[in-house]
Length: 129
Image (cartoon, rainbow, N blue to C red):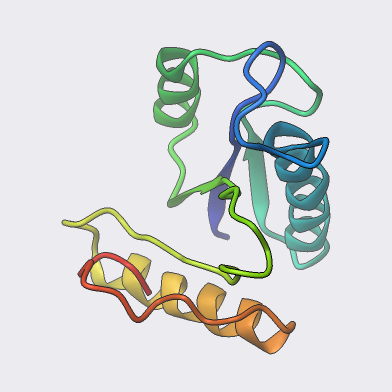
């Protein structure tokens, strides 16, 4: 069975991007907890770097991910742009990631677009799907 580490970007004292009173840390946590629930429903083993509004250092996130022997590491973030100018979903994979990781990134991006997000993958970055 697949083992997935979900990293909910920012948290605690680190709000991340802020736009019109919305905090990235809150949006990341809300969405990611739902993703974790759905993955578990399908039998995927899920590890989470945080499950509440807590502060975690990058070192702590890395240690958690490395100790868990996960097949995949997914970090959730949200950009802050004026919605009327820029919107959509971007899915990245580690530049030297394995082919399976690239396939998963493509599936995630396709699913987000299927949910109604604009597809922002058409950029010059070769690690964006």
